[in-house]
Image (cartoon, rainbow, N blue to C red; front, side, top):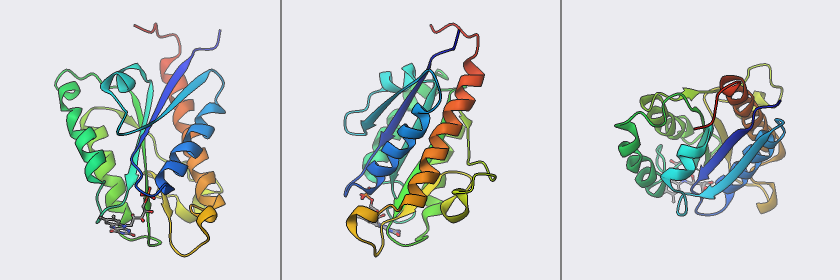
Length: 184
Ligand SMILES: Cc1cc2nc3c(=O)[nH]c(=O)nc-3n(C[C@H](O)[C@H](O)[C@H](O)COP(=O)(O)O)c2cc1C
């Protein structure tokens, strides 16, 4: 029987661009059979959401080369889970949206990644063989830009394709890792 995988996508988004990435990641994750996905704003997200998930995505707008304050508050709150290793072994992946094409986005992605690594999560990056990865694939996360296009084209279709690919990949890895595992 197929093992069920639970994914949660936690995001902060002031103007809606990062939220679109979150939804595209969720779409990709749902393509992996047996995966259920919850997309939740950081304002409503709880530790329970993280504890129940096999794969956690979290993402934020790039604010001066860092995650936003709202996201940081949530991530810092997970220190109580860190103490007991509650997120260790879960699959994780990150995403961020900047205005500029790069705009120091790499740093924002790393600010999101480092806490996952410290939690002992199994961080999944983008597959270099993924064609959509050519433009905004940082390999260590999904990035996008909200600069200079019509509102409905930000992020653009290629960026959203990268986000879907990331969702699909991380959910597939979680499915492999949880194969045969009893859910507590
Ligand atoms: C406080 C603040 C700092 C920002 N810093 C950067 C930056 O360093 N580089 C950049 O390209 N965009 C920066 N931006 C722009 C946002 O990253 C950009 O508008 C992003 O698309 C917003 O995502 P959202 O629509 O999900 O809120 C900044 C915006 C704010 C409010």
